[in-house]
Amino acid sequence: MIFLVASVVSLLHLVACDISVQGFDDTQCAGNRIGTNVHSNAGNLHESSNCIASDTFESISTISVDAGFQCNIYSDTACQNFITSTNTVGCVPVIGQGLTCFSQASFDNPLAGSTGNIGIGKNKIIASTGDETFERAISNACGDAICDPTSRDVLNFIHGRNCEGGLADVNGNPFLTVCDNRDQCTQTITVNGQFDNTQQRDYMKGLLKATMKQGIGGFVQADSRDTSPNDQLSFASVVINDAKGADLASMSMSIEVQCTEIEPDAFNCDQPFIDILKTLVGAIPAVGETIASTFEVACAVNDLING
Image (tube, rainbow, N blue to C red; front, side):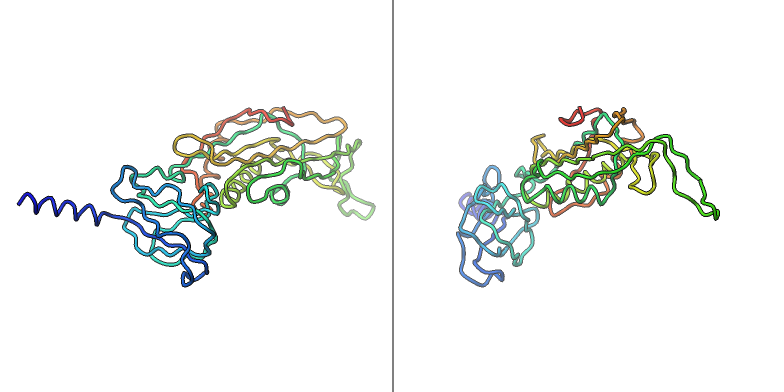
């Protein structure tokens, strides 16, 4: 009887829950196998394969999977540049070189429990901005892994002072606003960022755009023959942390404006602003596996350009 019980226990250990995947050299999981069949090592301390490197595969076949198990797929052999994950039986066309398979309950999945931290600059400036401006600045500066701070977005605009509106021409038609003084302004947007993959980049881009748009105030006086500038938050940053607090990815935007006689003013980062911002960024959907479960907002954050 003791022998029978021991045999049953051993059998249960052998059939413990697991996931099994295999790489292939084609996009249909029908070609030559790449590397070995990867399991989660069910029953060991962490129920994780750790990082399994291989030659480049073009598809991954999930042969079998039990509930609560998953494999993350990476483009590199060090399992740093996350692409996607699989937890259902089937073929995933994906080019990569690294895999980690694990029990989500037992293994510390670096993508689980991520949080977001948003930094709000202490200054507001007069700038000519909007969704298209932010999109252009980020897209031009950011590649697949970093944002190049030397790829700046530069724009010239006119800021009018001592303006009078509501004027009409001799026929009674509305006339342009007339300003006593018109300042020529040069606006420079700088974007910094580091991330492991385009999913993190695109998710943070959504967060950063939402933050900067929320930092736009009312339009200020300007000559309507030119762009209409507005009060604008001068700096914001987004950092995604893992469940242990380590940085996974970051992105920031600085706006510097040089005009004849305009100085930065203090940005009002009050509780209503914070509450609205948290609601906005919390509604931004995940990009792949990248999403923050909660957000914290810090005010009066310094940046290198705007102090």
